Length: 165
Image (tube, rainbow, N blue to C red; front, top):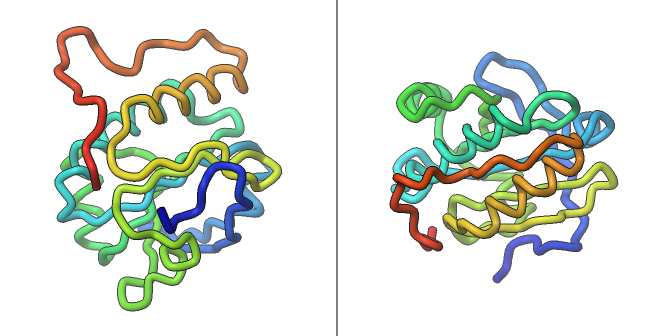
């Protein structure tokens, strides 16, 4: 794996969201942990994963926990993706020609999801869809917010253990 692994320091970044607001990792970490999910709109595994990230966001976001989608596509396509898959957390645009932040994180596949703690250390680094990693993120955020951990996956859903990105 060539991407940033758990225990590494997350590279700092500053990117603009679809509404033009600037998001700086260092500023966000002063408020609490950050879940950063890198994706491409054409990626079927990203399309599968983002509704589960939205569930995490609805349950554990806010109160100092920031969720970010970091798109490797243009703003219009990213906005359409967010609408189609019901994503309400901020969607940031990595420079679609140079992928400056994606390259700083050494991405080889999408989706790649990071849980970054307030000290800037990566607690979870997950490539593709990984059920256990998403459950670990949920447990970390529930503990941080001192709230009860809720099941991320419903009993009536058929969810694979993993899907490579």
